[in-house]
Length: 423
Image 1 (cartoon, rainbow, N blue to C red):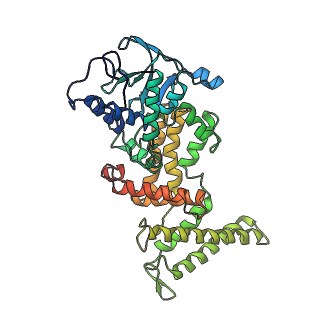
Image 2 (cartoon, rainbow, N blue to C red; image 1 turned 135 degrees about the vertical axis):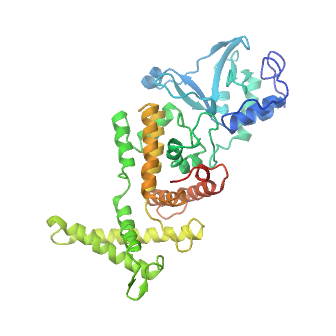
Image 3 (cartoon, helix red, strand yellow; image 1 turned 45 degrees about the vertical axis):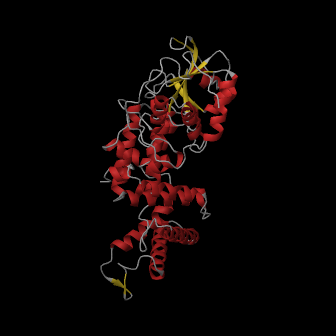
């Protein structure tokens, strides 16, 4: 395929690059691929990388807030001597500020919506992996070809910000609490300066599912998550009953060693009976539920919930997430992991600033360490919470996505869970 050239006969414009010298540390895998392709003058590979990643461009916030305008604004480039439209890959984005903001697009979308054949596309201008491409129709046809063949969406991938993102310490620990979500989406797990799906995308992300329409709404949701108060309280109630049974037994009950029988029929009967006693005591307290109808209804719900949890744990064991005698200690990780993400979503949507988001991320790590002993234990709590909330025992993407993410995070040598001590 022909690659129409720039002012010096190659698509990048400017002086042709010399031999590859690893003097620059690219922030992510994307910039590394662009840098290497540029050094080799392998513009097909450069386009393939662009076609398989999100591209971001800046906008004034006012028109976007008021009218939803995502207009493209060019600048005059002394490199090409033309008007250029600049896009940045995610590793090259600056820290979020109130204004301007960044929105997200793809190479394919740029090819379809390019407004002026006289404009050039500037990729990461001013950086070692920069390149400039004319925006004529033949070149845009090349963009679409590469986007069509390359796009995978970067899902189910561990991606790390090697420059500009914390790799150790309290902030990194708190960010790693959201790593399951980041791996599933293919987003940078340690990007504290979060742009995510772009300013408008992050606002939309938490507008519908979370009912966040302003700063106060965001702060309320953030606190609820950090306090473990967003999940169904019955989930933690039944697991707390089982924890008490596990914790109390050096002795025996009806001749059986309750310290070793944690997953069999006898353990299930003890769990169900103890849950019923605890629920009836709670419902009957303070003069409530005089006829017992409320207690009966709640006991029925809790018994059904125990059955769901046991079936999920059985599946976890079959898929190698739990050992043969393992159980899930708590589902608080579902709230805490989402708290780590909510801090970043709020920053991306400009409902908080960097300092406030960072404090929330650190707190997410702190409360996680109080509730769990290891990353594996934390992960299983998160996965079970997600399944109880969404999956309804279908074991579809709500489940399988998390199994994939769990395996990546517990085996990949670059995983934060293998490089950051849980405690």
